Length: 552
Image 1 (tube, rainbow, N blue to C red):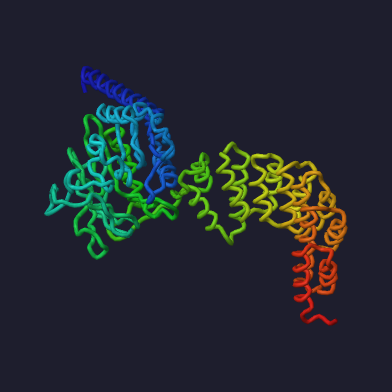
Image 2 (cartoon, one colour):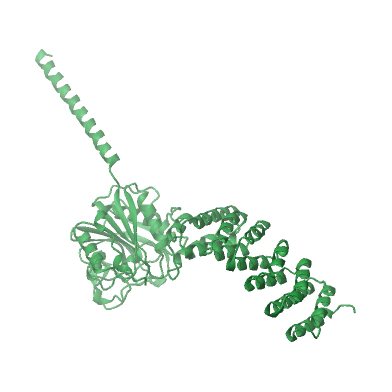
């Protein structure tokens, strides 16, 4: 090789090395940019929903699914409760987000909020229409254009056509009829109709969706609409006999809209939301709506043409449920509370799980949750509460606002720790709180509280004295009987009548326990002519009952 050729080769090799080095640097820089890129921002709109669905259940699951992609940071915009009259103040900052996920079917937004939403979409904002959100706002023209198709809410042929897939193509069916129906929930097969769209690209042509509502007879403007997938509404399952659109997109101005009818959610188990087909299409649809691209690969556990595939973990944990209803107030929907109660019932017979649930409940009581929410938690603790709840509830006894609810829970719990807490709270309590504690000690028939309650018979507060007398009548042990026997001669007026009645109840209790001789002694004592007529009659009736089978 000539010297000139060697020089040329060295120059070419140097150029190749320089090019390789630049490529490596470029790749590293690009990777660094991608790795350090901020996640896209998603906003889930919720707060009101029709009676068939529960956003308290669905919204946290949607948030979890989107954030698990690593592509999104998700916030909630929760509307005021239905009927609160505060919708004018509901003004989400749509423009701050790459995609808005609609999990809402409730009162109309203010004109300002409606205009802001339309402007957001027109200017390129992404939207995901999730399941029953397409039931919303039947009379809002722009909203119906954005979602493409909707159901219920009085929609009919005036709302627009049905969209049908017939003979391999889309048909706009203008037949008269209702807008929105579905057969009973069942497993059904989904057929991909657009295999090249970024959302459905590389998905199996056919795949099974887990038990769900199959939305049918949706109708609307359906302008700039692309059907991605359909499902056959089998007449044998009370379906329409049509291939109904279940995944589709809408272009509105510069905005991209992904609409999925999947994902019915009211209470666990959430089979429809645990379906891998739903999860993956939601994640890919949200990415496309936000960016126009889909970078996510189709996972290996995607359902097949014959088998459903389910991912556990998308039903709400108890802590998520509790967080979602922490602002509950009287008069609002109790669906979230019902979901919590259902969760608790599912743990019956499982002591370890109930113990963890109890811990979570106690954290709610320690928090700044609403009065109504804490009252609900105390009612749940009244069923599952153990000694670990006693210290927290005991502290609440002294707080006027929470004393009754704490006492409600303690009164229905058993154990010496409960009685000790009630007894310890008694001396320092005043007024209604003291009366309540006395009543609870009576319900528990706490013999160790008899001494304190015996003294309270003579309290200057008539209500406290009356409560102490009633409680002693429920305890009805020997010391309580003796205290009432003394009190009947030391009291007057209405309080004396209460003492005599409690004394009679002690005798009734002795009969129930089989100690008829002691009971007869009390009845005879109270049957004298010096006793009030009603007491005397009750005592004589008691004597007859107690004398039955008793040797004279």
